[in-house]
Length: 275
Image (cartoon, rainbow, N blue to C red; front, side, top):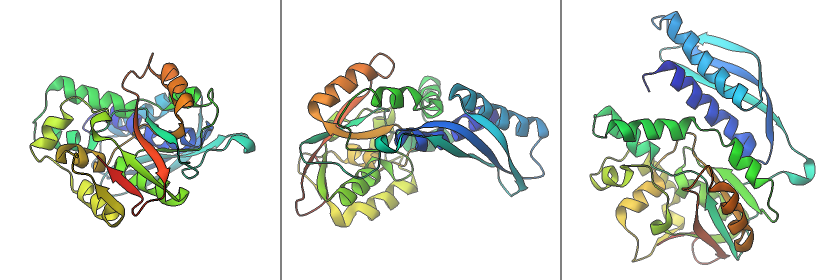
């Protein structure tokens, strides 16, 4: 990410996402910024302006922060949000009979790896940046309008496989992900089929492998994309199918790629299946 303003936007959106994933609303944040001496002051300002823009969009106040010297730029937010105690969402609690809804397409790790080698189109590059900079605010608002949500998490560095695995393990269930149903960012599948896979995807695969059953119908490129580490990914929500349909109706006007990507079963031999 060479554009400092966009860098700041994406980092802030990623930080704010954790509050939305718990059913909450961000209210106050602190900047956390690490910068090398060689970074121009105008770039530092642009990073902070990008983060501030996302905080304003989230109706969240940045109340200060901390800045230190480091060898490479790092930026994020420490966010405080509010949620009613009776409506806190956790990344555990999925129940047999639930389905899983995903609110953003996946593939940002593969595509940012491809960007470094100048392998994707300008349109695909701009699209992945836009997805990463998009807040989960509206998805969180839609989520609060449906009943029966049993579990929720945001999909970030562990990839869809890793976060689904944690939900399954913590809930004592088996989750089956449907590769053919996964919403993908533009050109992500092409890059995965070419073998443009970030190292983090292999670490994620190693992490879940002892509890993963890959069914014969699974396609390798889609499995790789399910393991792909995401930056500022969407929400992964476990809820009954009839409520999922209501949620999708709320999501589709602004997130048409939202989809049911998996199902929840009583615990089997492994906690995660991929077909």
